[in-house]
Length: 143
Image (cartoon, rainbow, N blue to C red; front, side):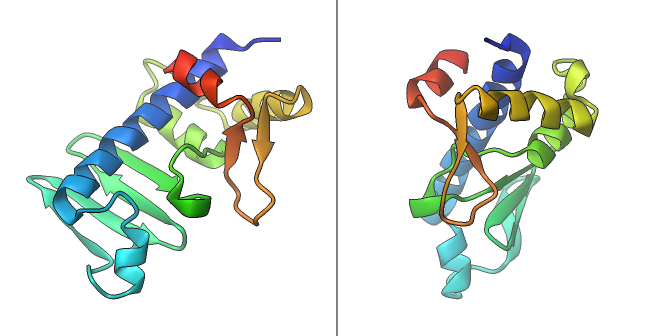
């Protein structure tokens, strides 16, 4: 079973997260800025550059680009390749022209559940809500 639309959505989301964390690293010298906030080295909210701003929350980060907002959680060891139904749903609604079929949360949940059942994605055992591709090469192929 392969769901190309789902893999495209996940790959698109993770590609945006990767670009955003590269911007954060350029600004702060670290892709995992959550620990910088927790050690009071940076404020919870601020500017990255120009009209790009960030807001840290719980275990994640929300970055506001001029036209969209990308929200992601950091995973174990600062991983940024995680996703969940809520974030994919929000992302699809930011880009409905690319991900129309995933602008309904129940569709995202259904398709992710099918991938979990098929063993294509997994949930980490450390309490995070993030899901990850079991085969890390799958992400590379779909982005």
